[in-house]
Image (cartoon, rainbow over the protein chains, first blue to last red):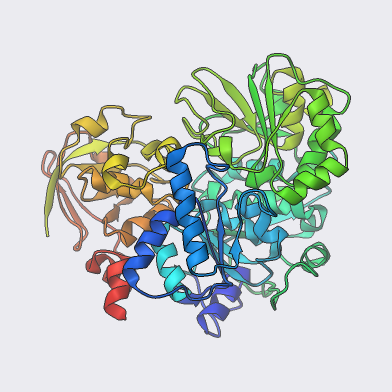
Length: 419
Length: 162
C-alpha cells in the first residue's frame, strides 16, 4: 500500500520506511513555534525538564496576539518570551515592528517552513504551512515545552480525507469560499483526527494565497493538518525563500484515503459563515439584508498582499458605509510596505478604513476592534465562536476579503457584484 | 482509582473560547483561569462547581484554539475527568499531557444527564451512572499514550525517560 503526503512526511521524520493510519510515531521536528500567549507557559514547563533548547535555529517565537502590548499583563507575557529568546540566542525571534508580523504569515514569508518539512506550533492555525507542502499542526503548551527541549513530538498517523478540486475557479471566488464551502459540507468535526489532502486539477487554479487560507482553516473542520501538493506555484514561492534543504512529497498512486470529497470550483459562489460555527456556511446571495457595524480584513487567514489587493480593488473610489468601522490589518511589515507601494493603503484610508500595524488583535477578541453586545462584524478571520471578538452577544460572520470589502461599502453583508 | 462526582452537562462543539475566553489569557495562573471557566455559556459554573464534579460534553469537545489554558481552567476548577462523545484533537492531547483524563464514549453520552452522579475509573475506562444505573465503557488510549496518562502527564513522562 502506498502512502499519502502526510504519511510520507511523518515516516521520513520518524526514520521509518513507511507508516499507516493509526500508527503512533515519534518524529524529529524541523520547526517549533510559539506566540506571546502560548510561549510563556511553555517556557515555564520547559524549565521543569532541565535541558537547553534542542536547536536555537529551529525555534520561532512570534509575539503577535496581544501585541503591540495592550496592557501591563500582556507586556509581562511578551517580556518572558523576549527574555527566553535572548537567554538562548533564539535566532527567529520576531520583535514587534522590525521585519515581523503575524506568525502564520511570516514563517512562510521568511522561508522558515518548506515542502516536506515538519512543524509544530503552539497555535491551532499552524496547519497553514500545509500550503507549501509541509506537515504542520497545532499543539498545546506542554507538547511545545517538550519539543523545545527534545526537538521531537509524538503523533498518531491520521487517516486522510482526499479533497479533489476540479473545474475552473470563477473570477470572484477565492480560497475562503473554497474552505468555508468544504467545512459547510463536512462539518466542524468532519475531519476530526484526520488530515485533509488537497488534490486534483483545481489545485493549479489556486494561488499560494488561496492555499494558505485553505490550509489555515483545516483545523476548523477538526483536521490535524491540511496539505497541498507541490507544483510550479509552490516552487516559485519557496525558491530563494527557503534556505534549508527540503524535499517535496507527492502522494503515491495507490495511497489510501478514508474518504474522498469533491469540490467543483466552477460552481462556487461567494459565501459567509454565520455565527457561531465556521461550518454555518451560506451563499451570500441567499441571506437577505443583514446590517453590520464592523468589518475586519486581515489575520493569518486573509492578511496577505493578494487579500489586500482584492479588498482595495473593491474599496477604490468608494467609501466605507457611515455605520461601519472597517479595520484593515496587513499580515506582516513586508506586506504593509508592499501594500503602501502599490497604493492599497492610500485606497483604504481614502475609503475611510482604519489601517493597523500587524497583529492578531481582534480575531480572538484581544484588542484593536472588540465588539459590544448586539454588534455584527464581517471578518476575514477564521473563527466565529460565541464571544470570539468580544461580547458574548456579538456576532462574527466569516468571509473572504471580497465579501468583507463589499459589506464595508454597503453596510450589510454583500457580494462584490452588488457594489 | 475511582472518581465519584456530579455531572455538569454541556452540548456539542464546546469550543476553547467559551471554556476560557481570550480576554482572560493575559494570565496562565490556573486559579485565575478557573475563576473565568465556562463564563460565556454558563456564568454560574465557576462559583457553583465543587471539587470532584465531572464535566460531560457532546461531540467535538474543546474545538478551536490550541490554548492549554482551557483544560487547565477545567482541571483547576476541581474537575478530575471529562467525558464526551468525542474530543477535538489538540484539546485531547493537552488533556493527556497535563494529566487530566478524557474519556470518549460516542453516542452513549446522550444517556448522561445534568446532575446525574457518576462513578468513573479513568484507567479502566469504565463509567457508571449511579442515578440511572447505566454503565459505559470508554475507547481505550492508544499504546504509550497510556504511559503518559499513567505518569500524570507528559512532563513527568519525559523526566522518567531521561
